[in-house]
Image (cartoon, rainbow, N blue to C red):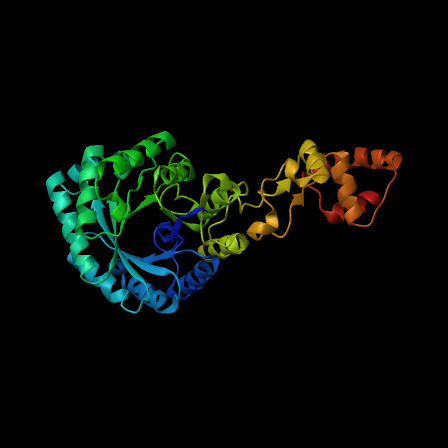
Length: 379
């Protein structure tokens, strides 16, 4: 039987931190409804202490969401935790997500503190949050660069204090996948109470490794992943929800599953992109405009003969209406014949060869041809 991976979506918190991507409360409610429809397990609705607007958004999402856990972020500070508890008071499944830096860089230069004081403050924050809600997640910020022995000590202490989830983020996107696997494996071997909590991955994409590191963490024992729609987030972004969901879906041999309904991946991607004014790059995995588009003649011919020659997912499975044959000067006769047939035109080989010669000249001039161009081509 496959093991369930919890999907923690932070589009409305980490994703919304992208400059120019801020949403108002009504827009956040639209996204939250869509995320619940998609099947995420936890919605991180915001950072309540950060502004009155964010407090209200978390509060309204907590009232709206019926099935998913609703989470609010805090620092390891009393006023933050108080604000989150107040904003989450109407949630059916509330979670407070509190924490502090764990790397020596953060301890020294961000907090001007010591390892001992960091553990003390982390334990206090978990216990204080626990006085409001049962479900408390602790984040060890910059765990990717933390001293491993200290990280194990911190993890053990916050679990003993009552943390139900421990988030070990690669905040700067620094680690390689094998390093991530080794670090999580080390913690499972050296934290005596680690099985009393869920270990979570929250990886940034500064080196383009967020998804790979998240999968490596899962393989090492993590059972929650913190992701965003379209991979949006601070700097180069976060781990992409749609990528992780479809990796686990396609590679069933890994033995993991999620509660995500893939048919809602593309519609959710479009909604978030439109509301945030953040275009999705064309070559983005799973939901990009070119994810199921074929323009090379060799690829087009193979795809038309059998889709699985060049597609490992069915576009309909992720909510994309269909694959696309894009006509450019790199397209072959098979693609031209296919598009002409869709328009109701049939040509024998000699006629098609003549058309193809004229097609290449037109494609060189116009870069990409549409149906109107093809009608012009055939007169």
